[in-house]
Structure formats: structure tokens, C-alpha cells
Length: 377
Ligand SMILES: Nc1nc2c(ncn2[C@@H]2O[C@H](COP(=O)(O)OP(=O)(O)OP(=O)(O)O)[C@@H](O)[C@H]2O)c(=O)[nH]1
Ligand SMILES: [Mg+2]
Image (cartoon, rainbow, N blue to C red; front, top):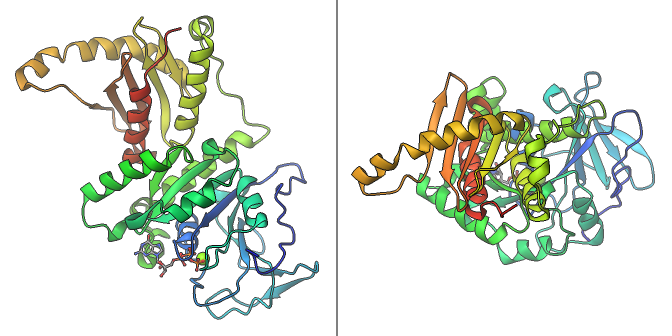
């Protein structure tokens, strides 16, 4: 059996009682892949201890609470709950199936972060599969230097299709030797694990980085925790009942949309949804139409013609350099970045808020959007 104990209050269909449901983020991955560290990086504080030496440990559920922060509740399969004095490497979980931890972390309000314990023999049971499949967002953690092993593929292949709700998080990126290792690994994971995940993210969640992140925005960004926290918050906003719906498609798009374009839009929206910091994006077609996406997609329709004429002007540059322009990045004002790539059908672009964007993620997303192009309407 995968989990040593039954999990009280943690059923496959997350508890949705109360006025505002919580977004359930399930953090899963093989033994010692870095799950607890990813949660700590998101939280910006070292909440979960490293417990690899303990043969049996509960699942963890961490959530924000203004009152009672610091409480550690041990839930037993029998229905009983007791409070643990501390949460560290020495905590005796007493056979509890679920350890619920309350922390002061308002940036994850309305979210529960769940770590599933994976045993070292790699056996994954029905209960774990159901919890992963039922996640609002699955963060699958894999060690960057050896990411996406056959054993991981075997686990993910047993889940129902959930690509738009799943991100692969590559841990210990701080241990990679150089930037080209990041690119090489990202490309391979993108290629081999792409059918399972909407995005790839790197984390550098060494203990000292997480400790520094508590008071240092730069350290938080470096850890990779901030970008994941942004993604989580963005998903939470989308499920909140009071969240206004995305702006309607511009009439231009709606009239032109063939079934193929509609399907393509859905694919692109899934990629875009995992990009924190995205203002809007566009993919132009051979006939000059623009498939606009992102939270402020109406801005993309206005940007597209201006970008096209700007790129047209690069012909002389390409002729002089003897090489095609692969990607263009423009800084617009202090906070906005516009990244443009030629697409098979025209061009693809993303308008991004620089302070909230992981550029590696954004460039990968843009490459993917550009490569597939836009079908004819
Ligand atoms: N340098 C570095 N160390 C990391 C990183 N992520 C995890 N570690 C270390 O790797 C070890 C295992 O990390 P955990 O976060 O406990 O991994 P886990 O998947 O929760 O482990 P189990 O719950 O035991 O399966 C710890 O010593 C961490 O400090 C990282 O991004 N960088
Ligand atoms: Mg752990």
C-alpha cells in the first residue's frame, strides 16, 4: 500500500464545503525528489522538515491561517485528532495518516498544499493516484539532473489526462553546472514529458536559499518559489466564485474561428495559464488574423499589426547578418517585456510583466506556441 495509514479529511474529491473552496495543490514525486523543499520554497519559510530517514510518515497538508498559525494537527484514520508540539525531524507522528500544518502565509490564502509521501520502493497505490488525479494543480517534482525517468513516466501514465493541471518541477537546479545544462534538460523534459505537463519549472530550493527567501524577494525569486506561488495564486483566483470571467473574445476572433482554431486556442490558453506575469499574447496566421490569448487578450489584437510592421523591418538586419532573427525581446517601460518569435504561420508574441515572469518558462511556452502555428480558419 502506498500510504502507510488511511487519510482522514483528504478524500480524492477535495473538501468543498464552506463558501469559498480551497485550491488543492498536490506536490508529488519520487522518494527524496524535493517535495518538501518545493512546498517550503512556495511558503517562503522552512515549514516542512526533511524526513527521509523515517520509514513511515503522514501526508502533509499546509494552509494559511491568520489565527492558530504554528499548530500541527495529527489526524488519525480512526477520526481522532491530536496536536503535536513541534514539527521537525524528531516529531513522532504516532501513525497519523495526515499531518495538517497551519502557517501564516497570506499569499497562499485559499490554497492547500499537500505533500504525498512516496516510499523508496516506488510503489504507488490507488489512494495516491486518486489524490494526484483529483488535484486542482499537480506539481510533479523531479531532480533536474536525472529528470523524467522511466519510473516517473510509469506513474504519470496511470493518471487520467490532466496536462493543463500539471507542472513538472525540476529540483536542485542549483546543482547544475552551467546555463546550457538548464537548456538541455528543459528541452529534453519538454520533449519527453510534454504530453503530461503544461509547463516546466526549475527550483533552487537549498535550505539556506529558503531561509533567505523569508526576508529577501530576490532570494525568493531565485529559489523558484515565487513563480510557483504566483501560479498557485493565479489558479486560485480563477476558481474563486467572485472572480470576473475573462474578457470575451473579440468579435473578429469569434467570427473567424473554425473548429481547428478553437481547439488551437484551447491548447494555447492551457500553455498560457501556467505563465505567471502574462499580460497577453498572440499568434498571427498567414491571412493576418490574430489568435489572442491571456488575461488582457484584447490588447494583443491591437499589438499584432504594430509588431508585424516592426518585424518586417528586420529583413535588412537579417540580410546583413546572414542569419534569421530567432527571437526579439523589447523592453517597454520599466515593467513590460515583449517577446516575439517567427511562427510557422506568421509570428507569436507574449507581453509579460517582467517582475513576475520566469523568462525560461515564458520562452519555452512561446517556442511551443510558435512551432505549432495557427491552422487556417
Ligand atoms: N541544493 C538543493 N537541495 C535540495 C533541493 N531540493 C531538495 N534538496 C535537498 O534534498 C533532500 C531531500 O529534499 P526533500 O525536500 O526532503 O525531498 P522530499 O521529496 O520531500 O523527500 P521525502 O519526503 O523523504 O520523499 C534534502 O536534503 C533537501 O535539502 C534544491 O533545490 N537544492
Ligand atoms: Mg518530504
